[in-house]
Image 1 (tube, rainbow, N blue to C red):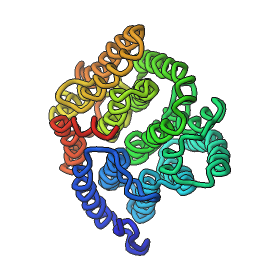
Image 2 (image 1 turned 180 degrees about the vertical axis):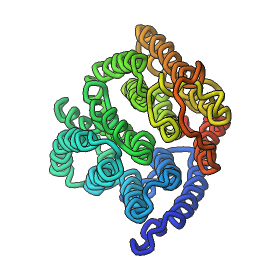
Image 3 (image 1 turned 180 degrees about the horizontal axis):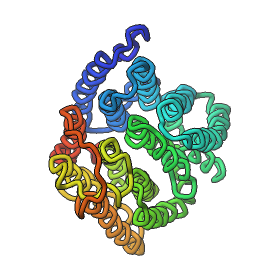
Length: 439
């Protein structure tokens, strides 16, 4: 972990890329030691949940750096961009690895700053300022009550550590306090009805901002909910039916919205809200299938959505448009790039052998076991997810090209980014029992 603490004066994108990949290798070796939940000490979390999301952060950060170099537009501020990526990786690691409530809150909130600077400083449209304001006020407005809740918990238990709270069975909170505890995480997830900041932030963010948003920042919400559920099991049981219903209804509504989208980046952004709604429903069942499927969904969705945003940006760099209609006919121009578009589109609709398939099956089992009525929304969500994923693949690829522009051959770095997203997404299916062992 000391590699993350390198002096800012030597920030260099090549050095940082190699160091993040080295940290990823150490995280992989660390993860495969864990086959049950365990706590090593009161400050550092070392269970499969935190280690997996830390690995996801270390894996995405170097891909952000490589994608920024591909754009070839920021020759003078590469060091500033590397600083933003370094800060994001540091605060994400602190968020996932700490057991101290106050340090978790500080890092949970501070990670918004480099993301906001990425959107405002490297976004290309004037609307990026409005997107940054949406991101800031949505997250801060819901997070300030969380700080009050943490202080209230400290006054009850005289402790700011998660393990002390888990082992204390005398704590009794009202349902209102339970809602305050998870409100900030529901906004960060985001849950339907508090999701409006996400499509705006995604559409206006640069490619690296979209990658870190989709791959890791949304997972902070799921991580916080999974950490809070053991503290408030009786209270969560009272509100779980409401949140589960909101998750399923939100997933259905955003599936409809995806079918109406013409902007490819907005379509991928709304599909993230759909997947997170399904994940929220699985978490609220508080069953082993639902919780384990939620962790698997975090990893699989982080890799798949990040790769889709990379593909949309690659197409945008060549056609100067994110419109599904204007970008059609690409299969005859870029057959190799469109092959990766096909692979990641079918992964997004949970086709085998991707990790998305296992995570959605686990979530479906958990939700249907909770109530048989949930089979109806789950069928609709699966059907419409397949529809908008096939639409995302077929419309830009097929048809006759009606605009003419200068073509550039996809570079090796672009294919490297796609391979590094796709390989772990499809290779981890051979070890899916690992994701069922931490709960």
